[in-house]
Length: 63
Image (cartoon, rainbow, N blue to C red; front, side):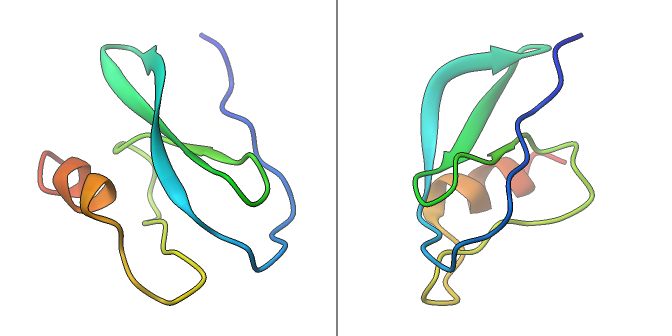
């Protein structure tokens, strides 16, 4: 299994879906630092505004 990318936060968070899947789940990535996330991760991404993006909310609802 390929590890997700994790990078130091630069306070530029902007989470978006990618074209990549991991174990059948869409991988979302931060455009600010390149960190990746899937719904099985124990944390929830937020944008630099403090808002949880709709794509993240949809994946969290599938946990």
